[in-house]
Every structure is written in C-alpha cells, then in structure tokens.
Length: 373
Image 1 (tube, one colour):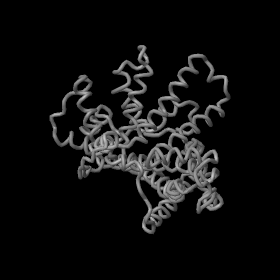
Image 2 (tube, one colour):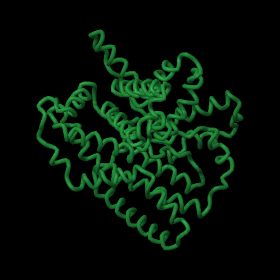
Image 3 (tube, helix red, strand yellow):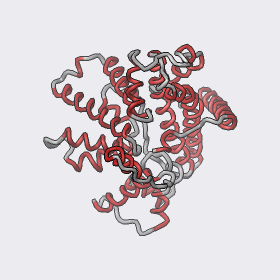
Image 4 (cartoon, helix red, strand yellow):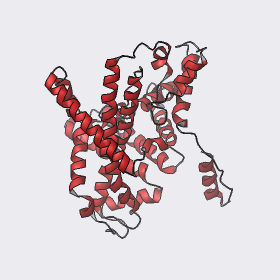
C-alpha cells in the first residue's frame, strides 16, 4: 500500500515523491489473514499454541487455497492437520468431482465472459451505448462469481483429495433477498472473518455505533482488495445500502415486497457496485454509470451491443443464470442414489474436464481475478 499513499499524497500536495519498486509475494493477503487468525485464537485461548513448526507452516502456507482463498481459520483445521484421517478413496473421488466442476466454471464460463467484458470496460472512455453497458455489467457480475467460486471449488476439491475439508466460500449469493443475506453467501470466509474479528469486537449492533462499525468493516473490506480508491468507494457503496436496508428492516418495510423483487433489487445493487469494483479509476466508473442511462461521452463506440449480444454470449448468460441458482445441486442430490444418473453424471464430468483442459491449452486468456487481491 506504500505507493497508494505516496500517489495520493502527491496528488493532494503537488509533490513528486518517487514511487517504490515493490514486488508482492503471491497470496500475501490470504496467508497474512490466516496467520492473524492463529494469533487471535491463541490469544483468546480457544486453541493452544502450536509447538510443531511444520504443522503451523502447513496451515499458513496451505497449497490448495493459498493464492485466492477461501480464508481458513486456525480453529477450523488444526485438528485435521494433526490427524490426517480423512485420506480415503471416497474423499479423493468427491474431491476430483468438485475440482472438475470448479475448473469448468472458471474456464468455460468465467473466462469466456471475461473476453467481451474486458472489451466493454476498455472502450468506456471512447464510448459505449446503454445496452452494451448493461450487458457488460451483467457479464462482469457473472464472470467474477464463476471465476472466484470456481477457484474456491478447485481449492476445496484439491484439499479434499489430500485429506482436508475446507469451509465453503459461496452459497448461491445471487439468489439473496437482501444485502445482509448476500454477504452471508458471498466470499463467506472473508465476510465471516471481518464479522467475528472486527465487527463484533467493535460492538457490532449492540451499541449506538452500529452504522459506524459497519462503515469501518466495509472500508476495510474494500481496502483489503487493493490499494485503489475504487475499492474504497465500492466498500462505501455497500455500506450506504446496508444502512438503508437496516433502516427499512426496522420499520418492517422490506417484507412488504415480493421475494422476487427483493432478489432482483439486491442483485442490481451488487452488480452496480461491481462496476465501481471493476473500473480502473473513479472517472471510468462515473462514465460507465452515465453510459447505463445513455449519457456516456461519445456513446456508441466502435463496438455496439449487437456485437456483444451474440449467440454465444446469450448462451453464456443463460447458463450463468441457471448455475447461479441451486437447481443443478438439487437435481444432483436427487440422483445421488441412482446408479444410472451417477454413470451419466460421471461421463458428463469427464467430457467437461477434457473440454476444459483443451480450452486451457489453446487459450491465452485465463486470469484468476481474485489472485490480484
């Protein structure tokens, strides 16, 4: 964060202090949080200090989720590290299935959405029409979800193959009917981390500083993602709407709206927030919001919405909507004890695994969004 503070100071003061050449280790934000978790739990005496350096190193530098989570707290896994009793054929088999699903979400959905999403955001300054802006917003919302939840699935799958059970990190966040519910379903390991280690120690909602406590949590949440003002404003965006939601909930106004309206409203607020999150700077975010209502500068750039709303994009968006709901999981659970269903399911998994590997080999575009944070 050093260069962020230097740049901000230079802009405010007119000075020209040189930026530092800083190289960050991969996964620094995740293993730092895990090390903090160990210290807090030992301090609270909920666990004993670990005298085995190797076991502690395994926890802090755990390979499957090191670069992009989920954030694993020490009290969630230390017993598994000390007693590796979960290595068996069934866990290995289920781990492979989970890994393949995660890989396909990442490679077949997120990466394909990302190609046109990046193109849309890259031409915001030159101008995009209103339909293109809406397509880009939807596309990025689904891209970041399938990218990050896909990585989490892969991490959980790899860990299960080698005998560890990691906590779930996503629980269909786009079906949430409130922002409070959204944060209980999105990046669960991070939101619960801040809840237990920051929000509750600050007093939570037990004192008159509830809104201030929320502001601190969302500022830290935004700043955790990176040294950029857009992340901080994204945190403030969520704080504002969480405060509004709390006020409406106190007056029992939220329950008067149908569930589908609450779900679509929550999704819209989250998706609009992701525009700020994705934009390279505040000015770009502002231009994007103007483009949504047809007031973008030079609206109607080189590519118009007809180019982006191609058949493959329509199919990807439909698949994104379907797999953002528990529908697939419900069908899979119903066929769990059916031998024919399991055979077909495994064949489909093999096919999408081969397809995913083929795409990885031939594609030059496969960034992990959350590995940047």
